[in-house]
Image (cartoon, rainbow, N blue to C red; front, side, top):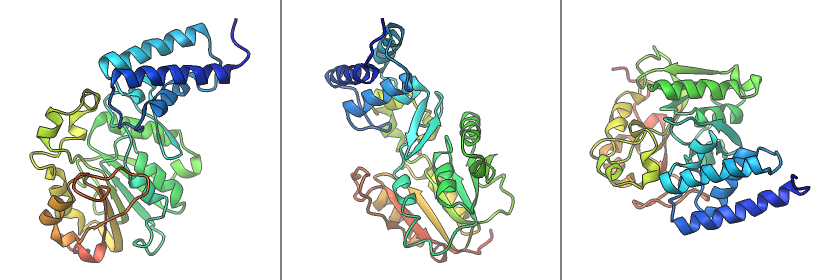
Length: 296
């Protein structure tokens, strides 16, 4: 007979699962940084408010075994991930949201973004998490979500459909290799979390990260291959006064050396994990410093 205290039963499951995850030595980093939060995401992602039943327990036990034995990240087990207050559908083959750009968005990119943006671009959008979050923050903006991967584009479109119609009506998902299919569109705010891991780092990365699509992580030998292509064209894509917000992980020194023209400001964040290269991996560059208006 199902328990009359489903919340208590769920809490007991979370506690038990957290202990087993801790003992198994799994690696965190796909939206959580500890066993308790990981167990909470797994249990609540499956129960979704329903009661704990023997069938649900069996389902959760099977997923926990996959998490421990196969090292599958929890979002691929539950089919969902959280990005701030957004719950997103995350099928296998699509990058799991975890960008600290979310924290900067919550500040409305203050003090660098000096006026409300009319057009926003989420470049290398993956699931669409950053761009959808931006559409909620900037209620008057039109947002383009761009990715060159079919699975990412499909997931982004599904996540857009799940949003408030007042938000989804302002978002367009575009299948494009960076700026290639965007015509002459220009933007007031470009948000970009491209692949920036060094290839050699991925070869020895924890098994959990091997489940994600390599092309969504691999930035080439030095991690900056995709960024070079972006920087080559960014000046012709920002409107005057426009702002570029990007992520490069622990490569801040290498990034500054490669792209001094961006005058990148590496942002201090409260909730993000400090990076080995210093800072928190997120930078802001104001349009005037990157040759806005340049074409070709």
